[in-house]
Image (cartoon, rainbow, N blue to C red; front, side, top):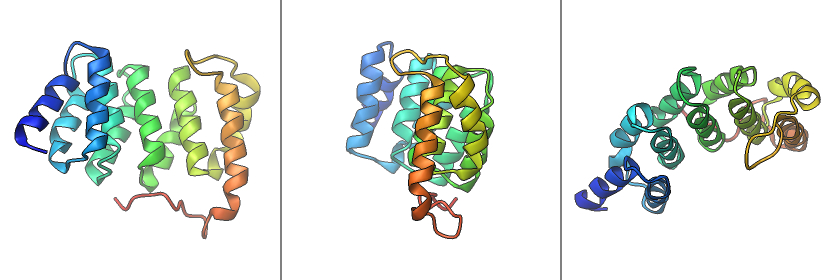
Length: 182
């Protein structure tokens, strides 16, 4: 990727169009240039609009560096951030994370935002995090709030429990096989 292409992606990611911002995020996926890391982290943390920050959270997971993972964790923990951005950070951590990410996502299951709880349940199910089982069982019974465009937190929690049960045989000595060393 050329310098000009990187500048264009960052500019579009920070633009006024929701559709264009996510198209720029997809372009990062098509050519995961590590030189985009500082700009993506800057947009994730300081982008003008929530959709710009959410697009950065989506794009940044492909780089999968310790710095990007810590940035996603930081955004997820930031209660003053938009639930949409925090939810996207949780979803991104499902695919690229470190051991500490499990703890950050576990804490997110008790968040006041249904979007954050939903995506933390999703991520912990993908990670097959057994420590989440008790909270997920409670959410599966009690949290009927629906995340727009998806389904209820209760259903996502039940799906996560199914994933955890199915993945037990894939666990090696109680360690997540998907964690990135960070």
